[in-house]
Image (tube, rainbow, N blue to C red; front, top):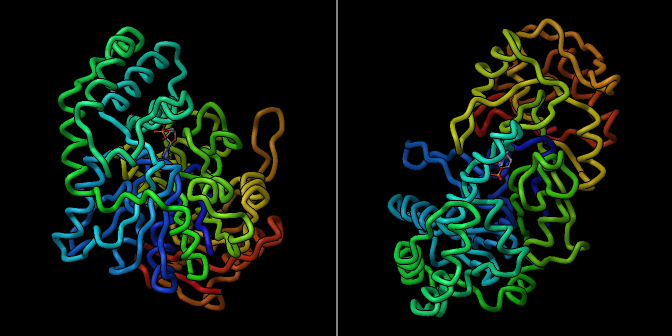
Amino acid sequence: MTAVIGAQWGDEGKGKVIDILTEHFDVIARASGGANAGHTIVVDGKKHVFHLLPAGSLHPKKPIFLGAGMVIHLPTLLEEIETLEKAEIEVRDRLIISKSAHILFEFHKEIDAALETERSKGGASIGTTKRGIGPAYMDKAERRGIRMGLLANFNKKELQVELNARKDDIQKRYGVSLNTDQECDIVEKASSILASCIDTDVIPRLHASLGKRILIEGAQATLLDLDHGTYPFVTSSNTTAAGALQGLGFPPKALTGVIGVAKAYCTRVGGGNFLTEVTGETGNRLRERGGEYGATTGRPRRCGWLHLPDLQTAAAINGLTCWNITKLDVLDEEDVIPIGIAEKNGKPVYKEMPGWKTSTVGVTSFDALPKQAQDFIAFIEKETKVPVSLIGTGPGREQMIVK
Ligand code: IMP
């Protein structure tokens, strides 16, 4: 069993390594988070951004598990299934959704937006994706969430009563009006399409797959983890390897490989401290060369340099067995490549490595990399004590060094 886990603030390019790896696995699983994630995939020559289905879903016939740790916005899931099925990639006959995953309702999204507006008045908005993630997990932690098991045995009346009972409180607390009819219609439609995908016996079923090769697609990333990330500027789920096991219900000993994915530089969307952030011309250059705009929200990402202590933390927390360093080619034009190695008086301390000033786009062998790029990779290996096994040299699936 292998997990692919982001080591920074998300958007490291996990989708590509997953796409490459999937053919070597039998089962694909997603453990936590919701439609705050975004990966761009190309179906029939057309680009689509997927938020809930794992990127590996593109590979036909492989079973797809959506774990108990997820919060699922039903219209988004239905749309993604429809997109794939229109392209003749059957999904429903292999989609297994834990009955314990939570439903993310429209009112969760509205509460998310209301809370962000409230926080921004105090100047401290988190910059969430406004996909309702925090409020859905609030309901889960408050033990009043409504779970996917409902779809298997849908009773509209019961849901109406439950939602109506919350209406006044939600209006009073957040100024959000809960539209019971709309919410019920969404669940009813989803139930008619997805009932057979809801697994009420998911743990035995998951465990029956333990002898198979299972690929867990991490969502978000280590620095956004609710416990270990840059709190409060984090997401509301556990994004680490341990969180992935918890979200699915696998035992820790089942995990044999953890691939940490990190960009050769660093980006962040939303608020919160970013020690090695660079603004101005250099920041803009990284953003444009790296195409750093959010797949979910379209927001320009904040850009900066690699921060080694974060990689060391991610290696330790997740028990990384190897790295995939992505987007090396984005640094091709840099004269000097700073790497944050420490913090002093709130400022980063950099080790400056010489740039290679030559194109690495599409390079597929480590030996063919310029010496300076090899040294850059070797430095990451040495300082994190984790081998770099995969190096991205462009957006295409073939633009990858397997070391
Ligand atoms: P939320 O998950 O929408 O509540 O957002 C909380 C923080 O996590 C914000 O800074 C978001 O920008 C960030 N975030 C959530 N999901 C992702 C992701 O998939 N990639 C990058 N940032 C994310």
